[in-house]
Image (cartoon, rainbow, N blue to C red; front, top):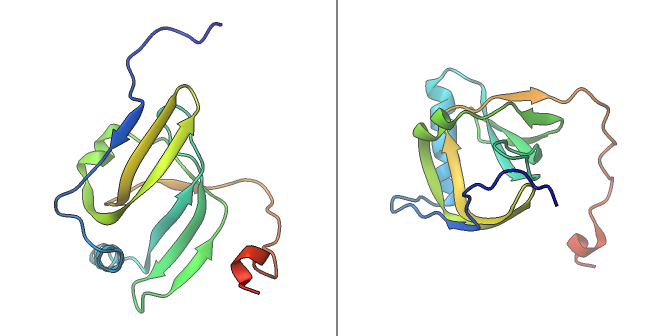
Length: 144
């Protein structure tokens, strides 16, 4: 069926960190790191789409986290630039809560991993128009 050359890959990867921190501590570490760099805010990515082989998918939910007061503001229209393996040497912290990410791009794989605080990742703006956000939350989230 012409799927390309045979190569080794993983099908299920489970990542743990013995020094993991709570979600609140991870957010504070983000604020502290942004402050040390002289930035007004850090970016917190809550969810991403699947990316292609060797790339991260675009963020679905991204928030600017204010260094001044920790306030979060939704940001839309971002995409990751190609991620080089060396960024994985500069992980500042990871969270204790883990999430499952299933990918069906070139191969089928599942990754169970915590949230990770990178020292730096490059993002760029999409060059397209976006629909307006809905006025009301979805019915399932309203609790009617």
